[in-house]
Image (cartoon, rainbow, N blue to C red; front, side, top):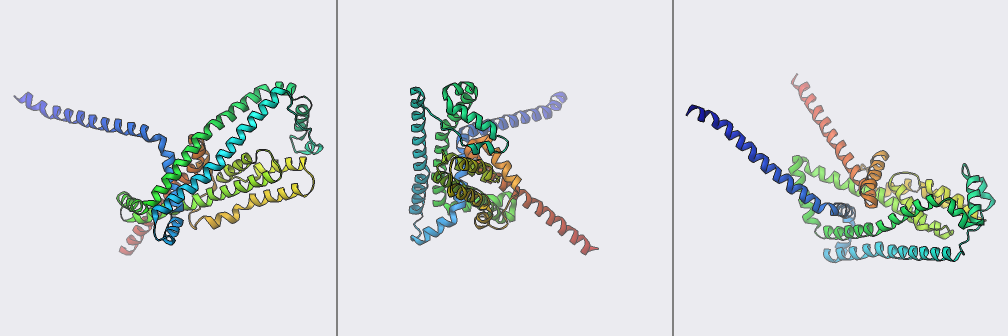
Length: 370
């Protein structure tokens, strides 16, 4: 009897440990399973939340002017934003496909001709002489010269094909995000209430401050960084189109990416301006260079106007977020990463400030007690 009574506590602990392990295992299985199910929607939902937070003040103003008809304003936001996104994208894709077909037909017929380079190309720094020679070779005998660069052309074609195939998924993701942003803004009051309850549950009495900091940072970075980059990219694309630069949408998009990464647009627009000077004469090239300089330094004016005070984040933080987001989640990650990492940085700094305030308060109490 004594041996049986001695074994009971150990057996009970073992049974409890097994039961806890089974429960934890089941919860982990369900969590992993749920994550796999919702993982394709994480980026669109996250970007939808960012857009909703960024445009919610404007949504409230428009809704108030229309008699607080929130559903109507939300539907109008979805229709207008989706139209602005889809219509230019469809036109751009259609033109790109037509251009590829035309290029293929010209190649098959042997009529593909590259105009000879201007002498100014030789004056380009570092790459001038080599660029002039290669350009001349393609101009004189395109078919034979292209055979020399067959591996590079094949690699470039593969990269371009991958980019084109990814456009559809990215476009769908942005469309879903815009629809979700409209839905979130329509139910804005309940969403705000949920955020306050969650923040209070996480950090207690300072939950209100956490919500204010979070919304301010998201709104500031989304409008100040992403919004400024979008304006710069649009201006760059329009400028390239006006002076006849091939593929103006591509250069505008590259400028947009540099803007989000907090890098100067002249990295792209400088070589484009050199190209414009090499193929055109007169005032148009000079005006384009001036336009490129305005775009490059325009963020110094736009960003303070769009970004609220006290929500600025270091350039390196936004750069890491943008590049990391793009590497992990593609084009949409470029936008999301910059905002999310900047938000985490601001929350981390706020946490450090709270700890510093607590330490100072403790020191003051100790001093007063002495």
